[in-house]
Length: 428
Ligand SMILES: [Zn+2]
Image 1 (tube, rainbow, N blue to C red):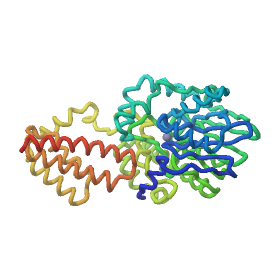
Image 2 (image 1 turned 90 degrees about the vertical axis):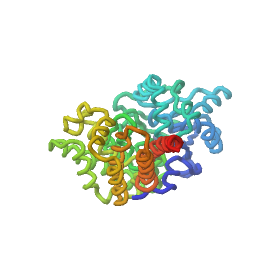
Image 3 (image 1 turned 30 degrees about the horizontal axis):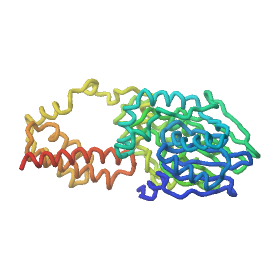
Image 4 (image 1 turned 135 degrees about the vertical axis):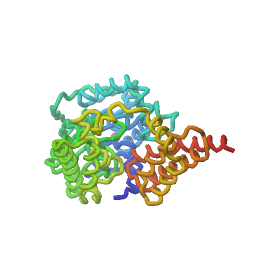
Protein backbone atom coordinates (compact mmCIF):
# COMPACT_ATOMS: atom_id res chain seq x y z
CA UNK A 1 0.00 0.00 0.00
CA UNK A 2 1.27 3.44 -0.81
CA UNK A 3 1.79 5.91 1.98
CA UNK A 4 0.90 9.53 1.50
CA UNK A 5 2.42 12.82 2.59
CA UNK A 6 -0.51 13.15 4.93
CA UNK A 7 0.45 9.88 6.64
CA UNK A 8 3.99 11.12 7.09
CA UNK A 9 2.86 14.52 8.33
CA UNK A 10 0.63 12.86 10.89
CA UNK A 11 3.45 10.58 11.85
CA UNK A 12 5.69 13.59 12.52
CA UNK A 13 2.98 15.20 14.65
CA UNK A 14 1.99 18.02 12.29
CA UNK A 15 -1.60 18.20 13.51
CA UNK A 16 -3.35 20.46 16.01
CA UNK A 17 -3.75 19.53 19.66
CA UNK A 18 -7.22 18.38 20.65
CA UNK A 19 -9.16 17.44 23.75
CA UNK A 20 -11.11 14.20 24.01
CA UNK A 21 -12.89 11.94 26.52
CA UNK A 22 -15.34 14.72 27.59
CA UNK A 23 -12.53 17.25 27.77
CA UNK A 24 -10.60 15.30 30.42
CA UNK A 25 -7.71 14.42 28.09
CA UNK A 26 -5.54 16.27 25.61
CA UNK A 27 -3.34 14.98 22.80
CA UNK A 28 -0.53 17.27 21.73
CA UNK A 29 0.89 16.64 18.27
CA UNK A 30 4.64 16.98 18.16
CA UNK A 31 7.29 14.73 16.62
CA UNK A 32 6.21 12.21 19.27
CA UNK A 33 2.76 12.84 20.75
CA UNK A 34 2.19 13.91 24.33
CA UNK A 35 -0.91 12.70 26.21
CA UNK A 36 -2.38 14.67 29.11
CA UNK A 37 -5.02 13.82 31.72
CA UNK A 38 -6.65 16.54 33.83
CA UNK A 39 -7.55 15.44 37.37
CA UNK A 40 -8.91 17.43 40.34
CA UNK A 41 -5.44 17.37 41.89
CA UNK A 42 -3.23 18.12 38.91
CA UNK A 43 -2.06 16.82 35.55
CA UNK A 44 -0.66 13.51 34.37
CA UNK A 45 1.63 13.67 31.34
CA UNK A 46 2.44 10.68 29.19
CA UNK A 47 5.75 11.59 27.48
CA UNK A 48 7.22 15.06 27.09
CA UNK A 49 8.38 15.16 23.44
CA UNK A 50 11.75 16.31 22.08
CA UNK A 51 13.89 19.01 23.62
CA UNK A 52 13.28 21.12 20.51
CA UNK A 53 9.48 20.82 20.77
CA UNK A 54 9.40 21.24 24.57
CA UNK A 55 8.48 24.96 24.58
CA UNK A 56 5.62 24.51 22.09
CA UNK A 57 4.31 21.47 23.93
CA UNK A 58 4.38 23.51 27.15
CA UNK A 59 2.34 26.30 25.50
CA UNK A 60 -0.26 23.81 24.30
CA UNK A 61 -0.40 22.24 27.75
CA UNK A 62 -0.98 25.60 29.41
CA UNK A 63 -3.77 26.49 26.99
CA UNK A 64 -5.50 23.33 28.26
CA UNK A 65 -4.98 23.74 32.02
CA UNK A 66 -2.89 25.73 34.50
CA UNK A 67 -2.76 22.98 37.12
CA UNK A 68 0.61 21.63 38.25
CA UNK A 69 2.01 18.51 36.58
CA UNK A 70 2.07 15.77 39.21
CA UNK A 71 3.13 12.73 37.20
CA UNK A 72 5.20 12.23 34.06
CA UNK A 73 5.33 8.75 32.53
CA UNK A 74 7.98 7.90 29.95
CA UNK A 75 6.79 5.48 27.30
CA UNK A 76 10.52 4.80 26.75
CA UNK A 77 13.75 6.76 26.78
CA UNK A 78 14.04 7.77 23.10
CA UNK A 79 14.98 11.41 22.54
CA UNK A 80 11.66 12.22 20.87
CA UNK A 81 9.67 11.12 23.95
CA UNK A 82 11.66 11.94 27.07
CA UNK A 83 13.77 15.05 26.43
CA UNK A 84 11.23 17.92 26.29
CA UNK A 85 10.92 18.47 30.05
CA UNK A 86 12.88 21.75 30.52
CA UNK A 87 9.96 24.27 30.41
CA UNK A 88 8.05 22.13 32.93
CA UNK A 89 10.93 22.20 35.40
CA UNK A 90 11.40 25.95 34.97
CA UNK A 91 7.76 26.45 35.85
CA UNK A 92 8.03 24.22 38.92
CA UNK A 93 10.95 26.31 40.17
CA UNK A 94 9.29 29.61 39.37
CA UNK A 95 6.03 28.73 41.14
CA UNK A 96 7.63 26.85 44.02
CA UNK A 97 5.63 23.70 43.20
CA UNK A 98 6.66 20.19 44.15
CA UNK A 99 8.66 18.30 41.54
CA UNK A 100 6.49 15.88 39.55
CA UNK A 101 7.00 12.14 40.02
CA UNK A 102 8.57 10.58 36.93
CA UNK A 103 7.59 6.96 36.22
CA UNK A 104 9.66 4.77 33.89
CA UNK A 105 10.97 1.26 33.45
CA UNK A 106 14.44 0.53 34.87
CA UNK A 107 15.85 0.04 31.36
CA UNK A 108 15.25 3.73 30.65
CA UNK A 109 18.12 4.44 33.05
CA UNK A 110 20.34 1.92 31.23
CA UNK A 111 19.40 3.62 27.97
CA UNK A 112 20.38 7.09 29.22
CA UNK A 113 23.71 5.64 30.39
CA UNK A 114 24.24 4.05 26.96
CA UNK A 115 23.40 7.33 25.20
CA UNK A 116 26.06 9.13 27.20
CA UNK A 117 28.67 6.50 26.27
CA UNK A 118 27.68 6.54 22.58
CA UNK A 119 27.03 10.24 22.28
CA UNK A 120 29.01 10.88 19.06
CA UNK A 121 27.69 7.75 17.41
CA UNK A 122 24.03 8.53 18.14
CA UNK A 123 24.43 12.05 16.90
CA UNK A 124 25.81 10.72 13.60
CA UNK A 125 23.15 8.01 13.37
CA UNK A 126 20.13 10.20 14.10
CA UNK A 127 21.29 12.80 11.62
CA UNK A 128 21.23 10.06 9.01
CA UNK A 129 17.93 8.46 10.04
CA UNK A 130 15.96 11.68 10.40
CA UNK A 131 17.90 13.73 7.82
CA UNK A 132 18.02 16.59 10.32
CA UNK A 133 19.99 19.77 9.72
CA UNK A 134 23.47 19.16 11.12
CA UNK A 135 23.68 22.24 13.34
CA UNK A 136 20.69 21.46 15.51
CA UNK A 137 20.59 17.68 15.70
CA UNK A 138 23.31 17.19 18.30
CA UNK A 139 21.46 19.32 20.79
CA UNK A 140 18.13 17.61 20.08
CA UNK A 141 19.32 14.08 20.73
CA UNK A 142 21.86 14.77 23.48
CA UNK A 143 21.31 12.83 26.71
CA UNK A 144 23.91 14.85 28.63
CA UNK A 145 21.10 16.11 30.84
CA UNK A 146 18.06 13.94 31.50
CA UNK A 147 15.13 14.07 33.87
CA UNK A 148 15.54 10.68 35.52
CA UNK A 149 12.67 8.59 36.87
CA UNK A 150 11.75 8.82 40.55
CA UNK A 151 9.47 5.77 40.40
CA UNK A 152 11.21 2.90 38.64
CA UNK A 153 9.41 -0.20 37.36
CA UNK A 154 11.53 -3.33 37.71
CA UNK A 155 11.25 -6.38 35.47
CA UNK A 156 7.64 -7.06 34.51
CA UNK A 157 6.03 -5.34 37.48
CA UNK A 158 2.99 -3.10 36.98
CA UNK A 159 2.37 0.14 38.79
CA UNK A 160 -0.91 1.71 39.82
CA UNK A 161 -1.33 5.23 41.11
CA UNK A 162 -4.17 7.58 42.04
CA UNK A 163 -4.40 11.26 41.38
CA UNK A 164 -7.48 13.28 42.23
CA UNK A 165 -10.58 11.24 41.37
CA UNK A 166 -8.76 8.93 38.94
CA UNK A 167 -6.67 5.75 38.93
CA UNK A 168 -3.93 4.98 36.40
CA UNK A 169 -2.34 1.66 35.46
CA UNK A 170 1.20 1.46 34.07
CA UNK A 171 2.51 -1.73 32.42
CA UNK A 172 5.85 -2.81 30.96
CA UNK A 173 6.07 -4.69 27.67
CA UNK A 174 8.92 -4.95 25.21
CA UNK A 175 8.37 -4.14 21.54
CA UNK A 176 10.17 -1.30 19.84
CA UNK A 177 12.45 -1.17 22.86
CA UNK A 178 13.23 -3.08 26.04
CA UNK A 179 12.35 -0.07 28.23
CA UNK A 180 8.76 0.58 27.19
CA UNK A 181 5.83 1.34 29.46
CA UNK A 182 2.23 1.91 28.48
CA UNK A 183 -0.61 3.34 30.51
CA UNK A 184 -4.32 2.62 30.80
CA UNK A 185 -6.70 5.23 32.15
CA UNK A 186 -9.78 3.14 33.03
CA UNK A 187 -12.25 5.95 33.88
CA UNK A 188 -12.21 7.18 30.26
CA UNK A 189 -10.91 3.99 28.64
CA UNK A 190 -7.80 5.57 27.18
CA UNK A 191 -4.61 3.71 26.23
CA UNK A 192 -1.37 5.65 26.09
CA UNK A 193 0.87 3.36 24.10
CA UNK A 194 4.09 5.17 23.24
CA UNK A 195 5.72 3.63 20.19
CA UNK A 196 3.97 0.30 20.70
CA UNK A 197 1.43 2.00 18.42
CA UNK A 198 2.49 4.45 15.74
CA UNK A 199 -0.54 5.56 13.77
CA UNK A 200 -0.76 4.29 11.05
CA UNK A 201 2.75 2.81 10.66
CA UNK A 202 3.67 -0.86 10.66
CA UNK A 203 5.57 -1.52 13.93
CA UNK A 204 9.08 -0.13 13.90
CA UNK A 205 10.63 -3.52 14.41
CA UNK A 206 13.87 -4.21 12.55
CA UNK A 207 14.79 -0.60 11.90
CA UNK A 208 18.00 -1.08 9.87
CA UNK A 209 19.88 1.51 11.94
CA UNK A 210 18.96 0.39 15.40
CA UNK A 211 19.51 -2.28 18.03
CA UNK A 212 17.44 -5.41 18.40
CA UNK A 213 13.66 -5.17 18.69
CA UNK A 214 11.04 -7.68 19.79
CA UNK A 215 8.26 -8.84 17.42
CA UNK A 216 6.81 -11.59 19.65
CA UNK A 217 6.71 -9.38 22.74
CA UNK A 218 5.08 -6.72 20.60
CA UNK A 219 2.25 -9.09 19.70
CA UNK A 220 1.75 -9.92 23.37
CA UNK A 221 1.66 -6.22 24.32
CA UNK A 222 -1.09 -5.69 21.72
CA UNK A 223 -3.10 -8.56 23.22
CA UNK A 224 -2.77 -7.16 26.74
CA UNK A 225 -3.99 -3.79 25.47
CA UNK A 226 -6.91 -5.42 23.62
CA UNK A 227 -8.14 -6.85 26.93
CA UNK A 228 -8.69 -3.31 28.19
CA UNK A 229 -11.52 -2.69 25.68
CA UNK A 230 -10.34 0.86 25.28
CA UNK A 231 -12.13 3.58 23.37
CA UNK A 232 -9.12 5.76 22.62
CA UNK A 233 -5.45 5.30 21.82
CA UNK A 234 -2.94 8.08 22.20
CA UNK A 235 -0.22 6.62 19.95
CA UNK A 236 3.50 7.38 20.20
CA UNK A 237 3.29 9.03 16.79
CA UNK A 238 0.28 10.09 14.75
CA UNK A 239 -3.27 11.17 15.43
CA UNK A 240 -5.58 10.04 18.21
CA UNK A 241 -7.36 6.75 17.47
CA UNK A 242 -11.02 6.99 18.50
CA UNK A 243 -13.82 4.45 18.83
CA UNK A 244 -13.84 0.77 19.81
CA UNK A 245 -13.63 -0.48 16.21
CA UNK A 246 -10.57 1.53 15.26
CA UNK A 247 -8.87 0.76 18.58
CA UNK A 248 -9.52 -2.93 18.14
CA UNK A 249 -8.57 -2.85 14.45
CA UNK A 250 -5.29 -1.12 15.19
CA UNK A 251 -4.25 -3.43 18.01
CA UNK A 252 -5.40 -6.72 16.55
CA UNK A 253 -3.77 -6.28 13.13
CA UNK A 254 -0.47 -5.39 14.84
CA UNK A 255 -0.69 -8.47 16.98
CA UNK A 256 -1.45 -10.65 13.94
CA UNK A 257 1.31 -9.08 11.86
CA UNK A 258 3.92 -9.55 14.59
CA UNK A 259 2.93 -13.17 15.27
CA UNK A 260 2.98 -13.85 11.54
CA UNK A 261 6.42 -12.47 10.77
CA UNK A 262 7.92 -14.00 13.90
CA UNK A 263 6.45 -17.47 13.48
CA UNK A 264 7.09 -17.74 9.73
CA UNK A 265 10.75 -16.73 10.07
CA UNK A 266 11.22 -19.10 13.00
CA UNK A 267 9.61 -21.92 11.02
CA UNK A 268 12.13 -21.39 8.20
CA UNK A 269 15.04 -21.17 10.62
CA UNK A 270 13.96 -24.52 12.01
CA UNK A 271 14.03 -25.87 8.44
CA UNK A 272 17.73 -24.97 8.25
CA UNK A 273 17.37 -22.04 5.87
CA UNK A 274 19.74 -19.08 5.64
CA UNK A 275 18.67 -15.48 5.67
CA UNK A 276 18.58 -14.68 1.90
CA UNK A 277 16.29 -17.63 1.24
CA UNK A 278 14.07 -16.80 4.21
CA UNK A 279 13.85 -13.14 3.20
CA UNK A 280 12.72 -13.81 -0.36
CA UNK A 281 10.30 -16.54 0.68
CA UNK A 282 8.81 -14.18 3.25
CA UNK A 283 8.28 -11.52 0.56
CA UNK A 284 6.40 -14.09 -1.51
CA UNK A 285 4.03 -15.07 1.31
CA UNK A 286 3.18 -11.63 2.74
CA UNK A 287 -0.59 -11.76 3.24
CA UNK A 288 -2.72 -9.19 1.43
CA UNK A 289 -4.56 -8.36 4.62
CA UNK A 290 -1.34 -6.80 5.97
CA UNK A 291 -0.31 -5.20 2.66
CA UNK A 292 -3.58 -3.38 2.19
CA UNK A 293 -4.47 -2.51 5.75
CA UNK A 294 -5.35 1.07 6.64
CA UNK A 295 -4.10 0.55 10.20
CA UNK A 296 -0.75 -0.84 9.14
CA UNK A 297 0.96 1.27 6.52
CA UNK A 298 4.69 0.95 5.81
CA UNK A 299 5.23 4.63 6.60
CA UNK A 300 8.07 4.15 9.07
CA UNK A 301 8.49 0.52 10.04
CA UNK A 302 7.71 -2.14 7.43
CA UNK A 303 7.38 -5.89 6.88
CA UNK A 304 10.82 -6.24 5.25
CA UNK A 305 12.51 -4.74 8.30
CA UNK A 306 10.55 -7.08 10.57
CA UNK A 307 11.89 -10.16 8.75
CA UNK A 308 15.41 -9.00 9.56
CA UNK A 309 14.46 -8.28 13.17
CA UNK A 310 13.18 -11.78 13.77
CA UNK A 311 16.17 -13.52 12.19
CA UNK A 312 18.59 -11.31 14.05
CA UNK A 313 16.86 -11.99 17.35
CA UNK A 314 17.98 -15.60 17.16
CA UNK A 315 20.93 -15.69 14.76
CA UNK A 316 24.47 -14.30 14.49
CA UNK A 317 25.94 -12.01 11.84
CA UNK A 318 27.02 -14.74 9.39
CA UNK A 319 23.71 -15.06 7.62
CA UNK A 320 24.25 -16.27 4.04
CA UNK A 321 25.68 -19.74 4.63
CA UNK A 322 28.25 -19.09 1.89
CA UNK A 323 31.78 -19.36 3.34
CA UNK A 324 32.95 -16.74 0.82
CA UNK A 325 30.97 -14.24 2.86
CA UNK A 326 32.52 -15.17 6.20
CA UNK A 327 35.48 -12.78 5.93
CA UNK A 328 34.96 -11.16 2.51
CA UNK A 329 37.58 -9.24 0.52
CA UNK A 330 36.98 -5.57 -0.12
CA UNK A 331 34.13 -5.31 -2.63
CA UNK A 332 36.04 -2.86 -4.83
CA UNK A 333 38.91 -5.39 -5.15
CA UNK A 334 36.41 -7.99 -6.34
CA UNK A 335 34.94 -5.53 -8.86
CA UNK A 336 38.41 -4.63 -10.15
CA UNK A 337 39.14 -8.32 -10.81
CA UNK A 338 35.86 -8.67 -12.72
CA UNK A 339 36.71 -5.64 -14.87
CA UNK A 340 40.09 -7.16 -15.78
CA UNK A 341 38.21 -9.74 -17.83
CA UNK A 342 34.96 -7.95 -18.62
CA UNK A 343 34.30 -4.78 -20.56
CA UNK A 344 33.13 -1.99 -18.22
CA UNK A 345 31.00 -0.38 -20.92
CA UNK A 346 29.17 -3.65 -21.51
CA UNK A 347 28.47 -4.00 -17.81
CA UNK A 348 27.16 -0.44 -17.71
CA UNK A 349 24.94 -1.19 -20.73
CA UNK A 350 23.56 -4.22 -18.89
CA UNK A 351 22.76 -2.06 -15.84
CA UNK A 352 20.92 0.40 -18.11
CA UNK A 353 18.98 -2.44 -19.71
CA UNK A 354 17.90 -3.70 -16.28
CA UNK A 355 16.74 -0.19 -15.41
CA UNK A 356 14.70 -0.08 -18.64
CA UNK A 357 13.14 -3.38 -17.62
CA UNK A 358 12.22 -1.93 -14.22
CA UNK A 359 14.66 -4.20 -12.34
CA UNK A 360 15.98 -1.38 -10.22
CA UNK A 361 17.60 -3.35 -7.38
CA UNK A 362 19.34 -5.68 -9.82
CA UNK A 363 20.55 -2.67 -11.83
CA UNK A 364 22.07 -1.22 -8.64
CA UNK A 365 24.13 -4.38 -8.05
CA UNK A 366 25.45 -4.34 -11.63
CA UNK A 367 26.24 -0.64 -11.84
CA UNK A 368 28.20 -0.99 -8.59
CA UNK A 369 30.67 -3.29 -10.38
CA UNK A 370 31.57 -0.38 -12.65
CA UNK A 371 31.63 2.21 -9.87
CA UNK A 372 33.81 0.07 -7.63
CA UNK A 373 35.94 -1.50 -10.35
CA UNK A 374 37.05 1.24 -12.75
CA UNK A 375 40.53 2.41 -11.89
CA UNK A 376 40.57 5.76 -13.74
CA UNK A 377 38.16 8.67 -13.47
CA UNK A 378 36.69 8.41 -16.96
CA UNK A 379 33.46 9.03 -18.86
CA UNK A 380 32.18 5.50 -18.06
CA UNK A 381 32.52 6.18 -14.35
CA UNK A 382 30.60 9.44 -14.75
CA UNK A 383 27.83 7.61 -16.63
CA UNK A 384 27.77 4.90 -13.98
CA UNK A 385 27.38 7.46 -11.19
CA UNK A 386 24.65 9.21 -13.16
CA UNK A 387 22.78 5.93 -13.65
CA UNK A 388 23.16 5.01 -9.99
CA UNK A 389 21.64 8.32 -8.96
CA UNK A 390 18.75 7.80 -11.33
CA UNK A 391 18.15 4.40 -9.71
CA UNK A 392 18.39 5.77 -6.18
CA UNK A 393 15.96 8.53 -7.07
CA UNK A 394 13.42 5.97 -8.33
CA UNK A 395 13.84 4.04 -5.09
CA UNK A 396 13.45 7.17 -2.96
CA UNK A 397 10.60 8.84 -4.83
CA UNK A 398 8.63 6.00 -6.40
CA UNK A 399 9.25 2.58 -4.90
CA UNK A 400 10.08 3.03 -1.25
CA UNK A 401 7.46 3.85 1.37
CA UNK A 402 9.37 3.74 4.65
CA UNK A 403 10.70 7.09 5.84
CA UNK A 404 13.78 5.33 7.21
CA UNK A 405 14.64 3.55 3.96
CA UNK A 406 13.82 6.65 1.90
CA UNK A 407 16.36 8.58 3.94
CA UNK A 408 19.01 5.93 3.29
CA UNK A 409 18.45 6.23 -0.46
CA UNK A 410 18.45 9.99 -0.15
CA UNK A 411 21.74 10.01 1.69
CA UNK A 412 23.36 7.86 -1.02
CA UNK A 413 21.83 10.09 -3.68
CA UNK A 414 23.35 13.23 -2.17
CA UNK A 415 26.77 11.68 -1.76
CA UNK A 416 26.84 10.59 -5.40
CA UNK A 417 25.49 13.95 -6.56
CA UNK A 418 28.60 15.55 -5.08
CA UNK A 419 30.83 12.97 -6.77
CA UNK A 420 29.14 13.63 -10.12
CA UNK A 421 29.79 17.38 -9.96
CA UNK A 422 33.39 16.76 -8.88
CA UNK A 423 33.98 14.33 -11.72
CA UNK A 424 32.30 16.62 -14.28
CA UNK A 425 34.71 19.40 -13.33
CA UNK A 426 37.70 17.07 -13.69
CA UNK A 427 36.59 15.69 -17.05
CA UNK A 428 35.95 19.08 -18.65
ZN1 LIG B 1 9.15 7.64 18.90
